Length: 118
Image (cartoon, rainbow, N blue to C red; front, side, top):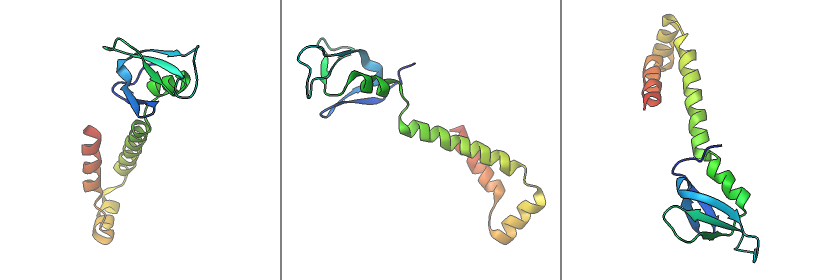
């Protein structure tokens, strides 16, 4: 498992920390209760933050890719698949699609390449 860099992790009650600044996550043993579940030590801070979320939930958020990143990877894979499929369309079909259907596959392929290169 690897900590995801620069992801904001929710500790509860409006508290957030950057994932790559968390040094330890320790469950509170004594006086544990609502609003007091976990101690989170953050780089550069002498005292730990008190989190209202359980330690396993915080750790899961520290190492799990955010939904937006996962979706971005999926979208990039779809674009790669589409580019591969489009490269197999012959010149005659491309011309017919452009002239009769208004779909310019060369322009679409070029645009996909630009997006994937960024």
